[in-house]
Length: 135
Image (cartoon, rainbow, N blue to C red; front, side):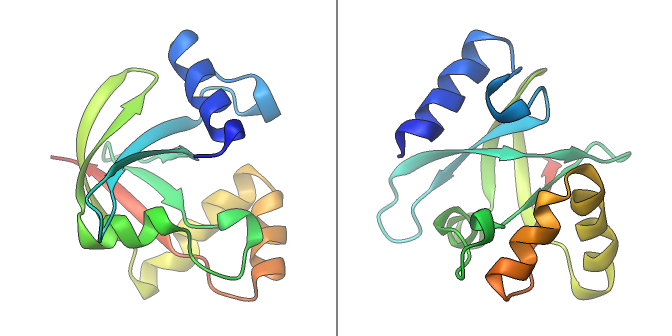
């Protein structure tokens, strides 16, 4: 895990889910996931957009990198995970938002932060969006 990610995780936990670093505020969740091959537990701090049905959306942007992040592949392989939210810990099921719904889900990210549109241009790929639904 990068030092930056560990800094974000530590700040999240120390401040009840609020992270002032990089202006994240209370829009992050900590996604506990397991390596698809190794089975090793990892934690990814990710921006999440709450939905009316109680689910949250996360985007596999990898900061505009050319490949999907490892956590994305891990969630596809082992979709039942736990997230830490500002409200507490929640058991969720992760599922990729399908094609017809993807454009609207992705628009929520670009509306929330113009940087996501830059990530998509830079990456040259369609960035997957994952729905985390309480289970």
